[in-house]
Length: 266
Image (cartoon, rainbow, N blue to C red; front, side, top):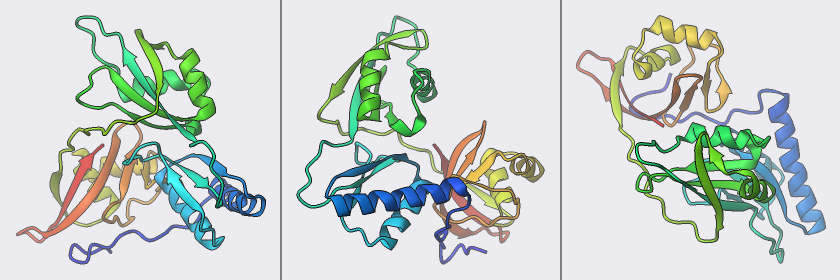
């Protein structure tokens, strides 16, 4: 079990299903094609779990001409870019600024509103990167997308819910001031998934176990079925219908010999 002293991180988890194995093969194919033909090759946007798998595939293929591109410095979703020497293609990721026409008393759309409207254009999630809503630009969003998806957004996206919007491609991405995340602390009897989840959600361990058994909990984008699973620093917990949380630290023990955890909600 992870210690509150040595701060163990979760090790690499190999592909768990056919979809993940197919992703690894696809990444290896991109590396092979790029290096043998001398052309740039790109993936779709990848989650952090998918990035771990692809990073391992690149290491195995001994490819040294690859990098990530998420469109901005702190991107979560990123594109694999395999670009051989003397290859200078256009960047695969485009930034689109979306401005809302907010009338008096109207609330600005949320992240889920933007994502829902984009998917309503019959767009695949893999073609979309991060959607950034800077806290100091009320009613403005920045959408990062693959080039073909960006063209569709510029033509078709004119409303987010019942709010009219205007879209424009921008060449220089601003330095976003991100909203500060509140770091919370709690004590748990053990560093098991059900105990940690209960502390994060402020529910009972039994209720946390029910969420896990119902297939609603992922750790680092991998479905977890055991309430007894160990947790580690930097793990990201996705609970369908409840949100996402990150375990940031294990500061030590309380006076009652319980494990102290630090975490935040995205």
